[in-house]
Amino acid sequence: MVTKNADGSYSYTATVNGAIWFVFASGLDSDWAVFNSQYRYCPVGDYDVTVETGVWNTAYRHNTSAYKFIGTGDEYVFKFIPGAGISPTTARFYIEGEVAPTQFSTFTIAGEPASVFGTEWDVSNTSNEMTLTSSGVYELIKNNCYLSAGTSVQFKVVANQSWDYSWPLYENGSQNINTSGYYNLRFTFNPETYSCSVQIL
Image 1 (cartoon, rainbow, N blue to C red):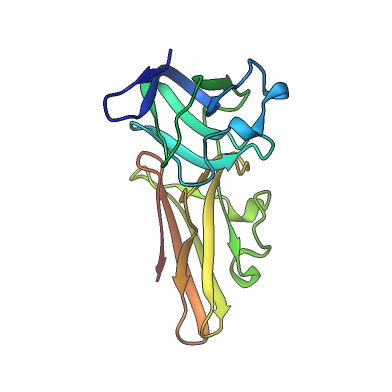
Image 2: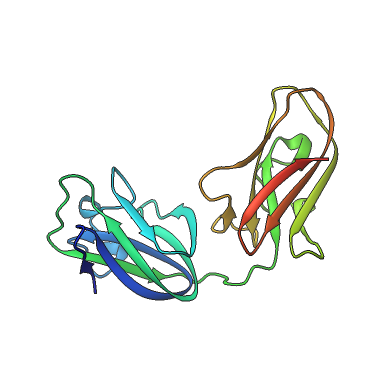
């Protein structure tokens, strides 16, 4: 059930365990196949959707522009904040589960340039798999990488070799190189906080 709040927003509460897709719309039928995009209210334009806590993923269905969200069995509040002039006539959230892994078995670095990663943005390159350290943080060390001045090392951490689970969420991790030379780079990922970093050793 969708609740209209005093501040003009709309919210929906649901328990989510695993990955789902969701969209907020007016005039939305009960199946993705009959979804009418002209009634879609997210995530395009000047509209905004938030979820209280939880893990976001930037992936979305191009034919419906539905958001992807990953829950861990908790109860979440999905909140839609309409843009100026938006007044839904039939407000509803549509949520659909996805058959997807909820446990991560591998974390891989994908990025550029190839002088660091061997291949560029290749989630299947097993030479870029991270190793779990005794501190509970995953790491990948790349030694003797030649990088030219002005190069920007760009990367994401990808779980289970699938872009459906990748971090940082909204941008790439990066390290700018000011001086040409050979570099040793240490990439880290904290699976508890989903934070990523790269350090020049």
